[in-house]
Length: 199
Image 1 (tube, rainbow, N blue to C red):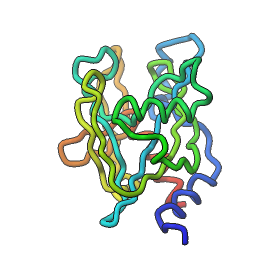
Image 2 (cartoon, one colour):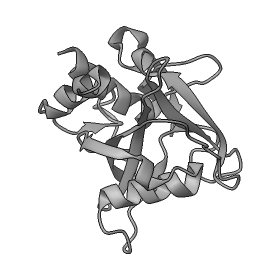
Image 3 (cartoon, rainbow, N blue to C red):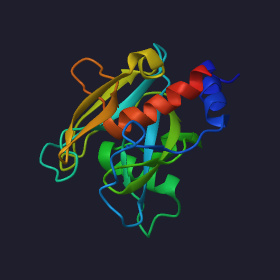
Image 4 (tube, rainbow, N blue to C red):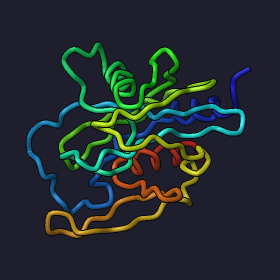
């Protein structure tokens, strides 16, 4: 029998939707880069636990040049040696949080998300069962933590906030959880998933 959370996610992934972007809430702000977007891939890791499904996220190391201290999915650039974008997402998840690709069952992908920093990200939803020993890679990840899946699948948990970026006021989605301020591309991707789940 299919897990009800899995069934719900599969139905959401089957619904058509166009790409999302950091500019969805900021149509008047021009992209900072004119060059072609670099391909990237992330894993949206859903851990199906007996006490309830949770989403696994990371807090990036504070010394990183790009997005220090931000909340993110495990993932990164698609390398030339990666067999596919999903292979890149699984490789990065192993490198960043010690997640064995053999423990992940990828059930589909969300539409690409285009970022203000010049990436085209493909998010892959993967399911995990059983006990996991997730260990952050200290050079990249400060912390690995979980959020109840129900929290990020509820559109009413999301708010729109703003800040100045490159001299212009920019708006973005947020979906905070405890001490973790989930915002930007991560929140926008989750908001897209939440919208598809409730349709």
